Length: 475
Image (cartoon, rainbow, N blue to C red):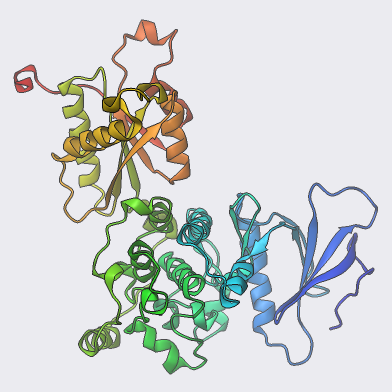
């Protein structure tokens, strides 16, 4: 089948210049043939279907059409139209301006390393986009630099869903293909053995991209055979700091955690990964972050034995998986608060964590900018922040936090409700726990309290905790 050329009319669209010629598809600029203005710039993607092109091209096209109808939000292009498979298959979609991660990778390979903060920002943007996809019960499964576009505002848009998985649709690739499907350099261990649908596969791919952007090298090379791919079921890469000694330990900690052979040892969700990359000062550096040599033969042998006898099972719904590992936020007041309120708040958080074993906790308080003083050293901004962090850690001492990831944050804002809501939005918080208003119901009819404002505007569940501590316990 011949491909349409620039100037051709296709189902009410007129083709413009070719923007990309890939191994599986061609991409053209496109406009409406009748001259009417489009709501946004558009492109047409046409799969390659000439003699010699594999059947996987048309299967991937069907998958991408299916995915783009199911996905929505700012991290995926908007779908406009699709062509008939029996005549001319095509997809018309939104053209998103920006640079793919290949732009930054070329800089690194050219001898211009990225600073850790920029690496963290890029990685966090990709993780946020992947998490939004996982919330819609979809997994990308082909994340690589060419398939991630960064807008001018720093947000990420994911591209090319031809190898993706959606829990609510038939998995055409699994039905048609018998071998592992994906880009070999970025495939997760579970993809190698045919498991599709685990969101932690995308976490692994983000780890590969971070490793590549940090060092200019691929962590596992680019194996082409099945035996080379299977090695990542038990082997881990050379630590990034062995290739680039100036990398901070926290960044290596993040990268190597993403690249763990067993999915259970990685970040449990892309939201957890984005959280760490957004708050690197809160990352707990373990032996992973300090390592300068790869793990030894004994560890690899144990993993090899485990991989040889492991029975892989179909993944549960992606949205269900990530719902079991939420990010909980507790807003702790620091003035005009009673012991009873703090006790009740601690009890409520403890109960919430107790029924969510995979949850991580963010302990937050909001400090007014006017609280600091430039003339009084005891009220300097640094002193107040340290005091607030100490207060938060003391408050959390009564919680059962063994084995959990916990972080402490002091926000500055004259509007506490706005600060709490913005923090929840920026960090994919699943639940906010905070004290209920102590004012009477009559007053709340005229004055919106901080808890009421948060409950009305928050993008997640809000639990308002009333004082329940018996008076006798106050002593």
